[in-house]
Amino acid sequence: MIEKEEAPSRAKRLVEKNDILYQMVRPYQQNNLYFSFNDELDYVASTGYAQIRTFYHNNSMYVYHLMHTKKFLDKVLERCTGTSYPAINSEDLSNISIKISKNINEQEKIANFLSSVDKKISLTEEKLELFREYKKGVMQKIFSQELRFKDSDGNDYPEWEEKKLEDIVNINKGKQLNKELLEKQGEYPVINGGILPSGYTDKYNTLSNTITISEGGNSCGYVNFIKNNFWAGGHCYTLNKKIEINYKYLYQLLKFNEVNIMDLRVGSGLPNIQKSAINNYKINISTTLEEQQKISDFLSSIDSKIESIEKELERLKEFKKGLLQQMFV
Image (cartoon, rainbow, N blue to C red):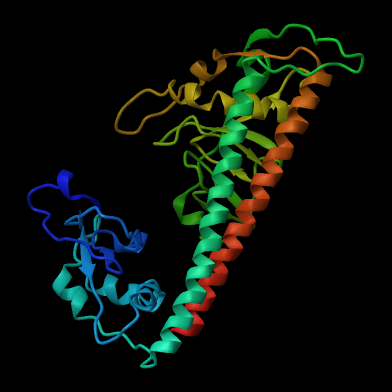
């Protein structure tokens, strides 16, 4: 959605308050909008959205929530064309039948309750983003040494030293697992080039609490800390320390350097990062375990808070999903 003055010539549909804008391309993303703006500006709907306006005394917010049920989405996807970019046209969308309450008061109560859950979800998402941004800012100050911890006597720790990664850890490449052996669910995740596991298996080749760096694919260079036993695949580097160093401190330091590590990628079709490039990557590290421990503890405490908010957000989303299922049977 864009303001009228900035709209392309083909987008001429003025949006009114309480209109619903429904995403027609890749509708499974559910990036829909309930238009509640109440200002003096004129807005138009982008051509990528179906503009929906209710009538016959139907509550538009109630209909908006109904359109986010799995049952409705399944009906939409059945009518979509295309594979990479499935899409539905407005005519097919308008022909989908929905079952609604005839009681406007019931519609309003349901809509208001679900909207209150949406508000809680939105506030939790904002809270999560604030903590993530806070951690980024703190990491920038700590690893640029703008912010320094003191020892027990209030003195500065020694200056940091620059080292190649190969001087700190042994870097090993995982072993490729046949796709036929991958399951959607299982005991051990298979870590490859992506941010998420590429599947699951019933065996592992790497112990828990290991730092990994994605070797290939669009996410190559992604730094992760795997807390459980796992299978390191052919597009995954595992890091095993060869000197005395706080391992979680090393993870936080590498995570801070993640963008620069990603810049080591070569190739275009299927980019990858050569082991020699990872080995020769240089980082500035603290030379004292005590300072490393303080940094690790501080950043890990922020991570724990972030994980707690992420779990809260997931619970809220599951709670809303269950409500939608129960209210719109």
